[in-house]
Length: 132
Length: 132
DNA sequence: CTGAATCCCTGACGATACTG
DNA sequence: CAGTATCGTCAGGGATTCAG
Image 1 (tube, helix red, strand yellow):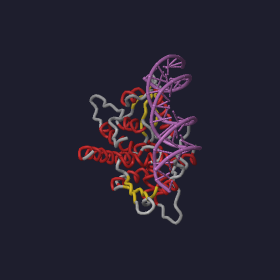
Image 2 (cartoon, protein in one colour):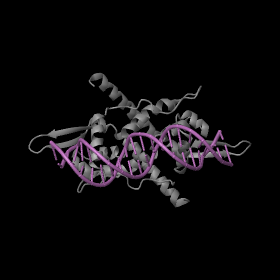
Image 3 (tube, rainbow over the protein chains, first blue to last red):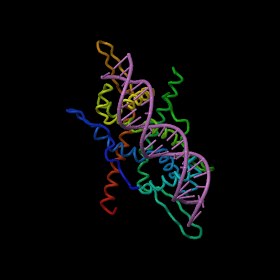
Image 4 (cartoon, chains in turn purple, cyan, orange, blue):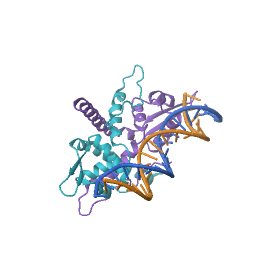
């Protein structure tokens, strides 16, 4: 398991003679999607945005996540520099997870995502009211 | 298959006595993620951002997508109001796919995603140069 | 409490062939 | 050209159990 970016998942090829802004933009977009990918990354990040937490505390907040999956996600996210682990060996071993500064830099993404999500939900609602 | 938002995929439960901004934010964020989910949605959207295209044209631009998957994605995206289908019955039947205005409103998401993706890739690069 | 190990299942996606 | 049908693969994730 290594920290990675996607090499080229773009799956887009430029058409001949076409200015293709979208093509060059797609690579970093897919990189970002890769990072926030999966069912649990965002819930975990947002849970930790509330404050640092222990393994069990995260599990209480992020509903229905199994310990296997949480451990796995946490490990990957640590590798990718999204979280730090504090192990305090004074007395009982306490392990806390904390977001890195880097992880906080994902916040603008979360905000635009949220805005779009709100818009999307309203749209669906209007449609099912209006004529669906 | 219906146009949907996720009912509650948040997997986050508020802790007692805690202000939980993140909890309320998570729902729309996951809605948005749900929408751009999967391997092909974003490539397809960005392909259509170049201009309207026929089925086969999309397939030429979005590399390695099978017709089955493309048909499926197109159908779902139409249901969700992301694309419109023009069928012109004058002479040979021509079907073109086109983004809706609504679909274009996802552009801010794509842009912040791109910015973060660029940052992420640089970070990985620096780390592997520096000490990894 | 914090995980690791194991087994299994589902659903997304791929390959190929076929139809109007 | 624009899809549909069928089958197969595979990784993410669930349930359970075990260990430090």
